[in-house]
Length: 185
Ligand code: 2AM
Image 1 (cartoon, protein in one colour):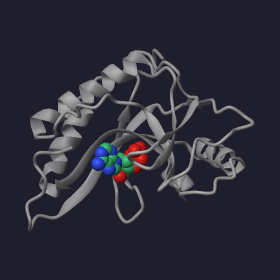
Image 2: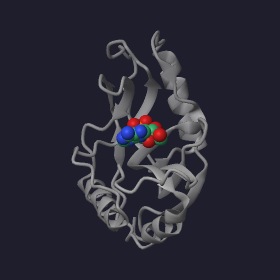
Image 3: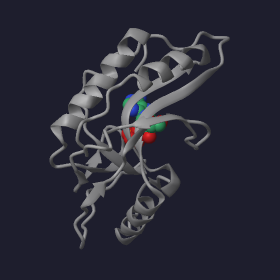
């Protein structure tokens, strides 16, 4: 979501902020997804699992230092309330099978709004849609919500947020900062 996309000759990067997934949690999610025996869509690679906080879009590389600075200035959450991904949904518009939260922690939602506000002076527009934390399991998914023998209940345990570049199907991290004040959470 940007009003300041890179000019025609400026090198750009496709950027987004997200919560990372630990390798252990990624493996558990992947195993669980395998048990769903899905017959539609493209699986998101295990190493690419993430929970998007804010999508910046195509950004001129000259903007990068200001983005990194603004991210570093964000105040971490005082406490990290559990974020439990416990709902499997099909999002028809984006053709995605996602894991989302029945009850997203209010403090996290406020923090994401703060992230959007911090990015807005740099020309990134606040997304008018309600932020719904989710992890995309499958793309191009054109089936109904699969039946599950074992209800999902993944406790998201990220303690930091990350600025990722989306580059040819891979997501290298360009910076990471604490999401919560570790001493107090
Ligand atoms: P999602 O899968 O969590 O929904 C990198 O491209 C990530 O940014 C994607 O995995 C997607 O997150 C999110 N993204 C991509 N295009 C987007 C868009 N137009 N609006 C919002 N988020 C987008």
